[in-house]
Structure formats: structure tokens, C-alpha cells
Image (tube, rainbow, N blue to C red; front, side, top):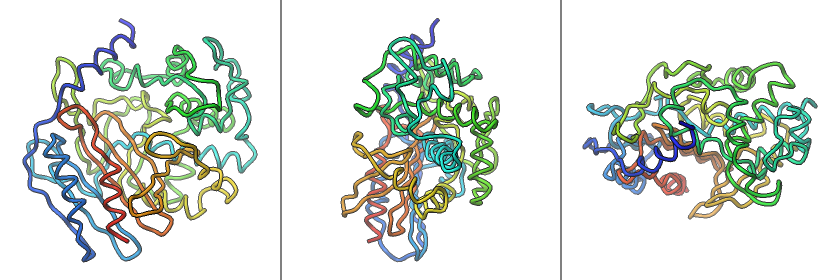
Amino acid sequence: MAVRRLVACAVAVTVGFGFASAGIASTAVAEQGTDRGETQRIIDGFVADGVPGAMVYAGNESGTWTVRSGTAKLGTERPIRPSDRVRVGSNTKMFVAAVVLQLVDEGKLRLDAPIEEYLPGLVQGNGYDGNKITLRQLLQHTSGMGNYTDDTLYDPEAQQREWQPEELVRIGLSYPPSFDPGTKWEYSNTGYILLGMAVEAVSGKEIGAQITDRLLRPYGLTQSNYPESGDKKIRGPHARGYDAFPGRGVEDMTEQLEPSVAGAAGALISTGPDLIRFVEALLDGEVVSPELLAQMRDTVPATDFRYGLGLQEFALSCGGSAWGHSGGIPGYFTFTTVTDDGRTAFLVANGRRADGTRVPSLEAADSALCAQQ
């Protein structure tokens, strides 16, 4: 059976499943005295709505604090901790974008070069022309590329097999373009698979090795790793991740997801402290040149946020904005945010609500960031 038909069925039924509330008391740990009650109320609501567990890790230059609710593992009372490793999904895109921009700084890639220049003949047919789609458009989701994860990410069969990037791109190309390149915005994971392939084409190293060598090691992100194809384990302390599929009910997805199905679009494993450390370094100008950081922060309207080059901008209810990225992947939803004045917030939820929807992560992050003003 074709992958597309499988996943259409899977997604249609998955939204009808949820998670039994863990029934674990909420906890708050704070190294600062400010009341975090609103943030606690929000994540308690996530658990009441069926999410197994949730945590917000936040802070500023004065210190950090944590609120959490539910459990890191069903059947136990162990809460999610800041040091727990989880799959962070599309937070990976910030790292891919940083590698691409470093290669631009080095003269090995050009932002406004067509993808055809680096991957000749790959993006052609079904209305696509790789000569008209630039790296900038792929980074910013303005390419019009079809989204391969509509077919794969929540399909139980597709989750289990190893994938080559070219295969994922072909799935994306099987959808006609959503619009002419550069004319609109629409999220496409296929674009980031292509960017990972372009990085390898000019450097001779796979994107995971580039992320490790250029970002994880130099910035001391010791609790993060980009798993190789075939490595489904999360090593070290971690929160379990849960999801639901037709005929299977609630499943522990922690070691079931084949990382190559996410690839450069979302394979990274990390923690809240590591992600915050990276975004802080990025915004402080330590990762890419000032000129390219300014372009990274040059955003276009998206949905309830604005999107730059691998970086999301979120308006805050208390004024100003936060920068970072969200990440949804079977088992986990994560959200990393940092403001220019040094406030930080990281959210993780290890499952969906009972109605099959993801948690309203911006509400929790907004609460945590605005509580620090």
C-alpha cells in the first residue's frame, strides 16, 4: 500500500485518541521568588486534558525556575526534569540554518543561489524547477515545496524503516507546488531535507556531522546529539514520549521512531538548557556573522508567528517578541524561546491532549516570559 494512503488513514484516526491523565500532582521548583502560578495553571491544564506530562524551564540572568505537571513515564510519579533528553523535532531547523549560514559566510553556499546549483536534476518535474527555488526560500518556507511529512511522520510503517534523503524529497515532489517560489509562506519539511543535502554536497559531510562539529561540540551542548540512521535510542536520562495510532491505542514512541524519517527537518535529541544555550549564542552573534544574523531575523508573516531563516519570532502579550522554534514529532512537543533582553523559556510535553491536538505551547511560553518582566 502506498505510504500516502497509509498515513491518511493514520492521521484521521489518531486525532480521536488521547492519553489517560497521569494523575500526578503538579510541582514547582523556583530559584527566584516571583510567582509562577499562571504558568503552572497552564501546564496543569495540559495534563488535565490528557497529556502525560509537561514542564516549563525558564529564567533570566538572575536565575532559573521550573514548573512541571504529570509524569515523564506513565505508571510512575517521576516528573519531567530540565536535564531530560527528548526528541526536539523542528528545533533542529535552527541548527541546520546555522550550518547553512556558516557555509555562506565561508563562501561555500550562496543564499540566493538556486538549489539546482548544488543538487542538479533533483528538484524537477510535477511543476517544480530547481532553477527557480533558492536556499533562502527553502530556509524561510517560501519555496512552495510539498511537505513530505504529510505522508510519513505519523505513519506507523514509515516510522520504522530507514530512509534516504532523496526518497523523502521524492515524496515531497509528488505533491504539486503550493505556490510560485517566493510568493507566499507555507511550512515544508522537504525544504530542510534539501538543505541538509546541499550542505553535504559542498562539504562532503552529512548534516548530522556538521551540526555536531560546528555547533554541539563548540558550544558545549553535551546533552544533545543528532542520531545516525538506525539509532532509535535516547541515551541518558530522558522523558518517555507517547502517541496513538489506529488499532494500537496509546504507544510509547521513545525508541520506535527511525531518525532518518525526520532527518535535517527534525532528528535532533536535546534538552531545554542546551537549546536555550544555543539560541542565546545565536542571538548574541556568536554563531553566524552579524550580516547573516540580521537576515536570519528578517521575518515574513506565517501563522501565529513570523518566520525568518530557520528562526521563528513570536509576539508576546506583554510587549516585544521572543525568538526560537517549536518542534512536534511523534511522542513530544517542544518549544524554545529567548528574548533579546535575556528572558528564556523552554516547554516540553510528552504527548497530545485527549482530543488528539497538541498543547497551546505559545500560551505557556508567553506566560513564563512575561512573568519575568
